[in-house]
Image (cartoon, rainbow, N blue to C red; front, side, top):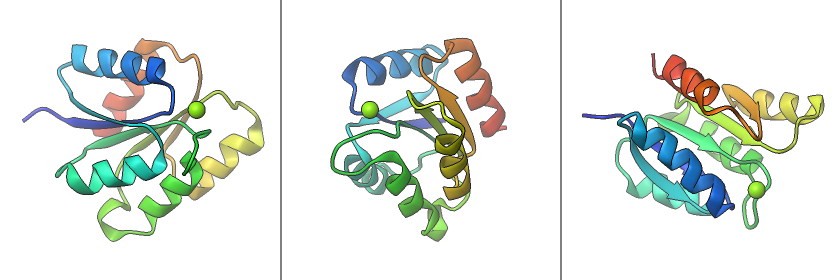
Length: 122
Ligand SMILES: [Mg+2]
């Protein structure tokens, strides 16, 4: 069974691009438009192996989304890659502190994103 990736970003362009990169690698993909949608999709999707999440989103931002995941036993160890336009040290620090595994600044090189995803998937 191929790995299942949840992509959470309010930009359709980014969702489509990341989905394209993941599908090309043979992964299954589910997309969500914001953190709230991400939670709903996650609860309804069955097994998700890794999350790629934006930070700045309406309704529920990425930090709140990640925090909500980490508070639940089922998602405590779920690998999370943040993909954000914000590249300041305090942005990175807060995301990592909350529980993101890797923080990448947009635009991220597809090869680098894939390398990180594969590393986290082991
Ligand atoms: Mg955004």
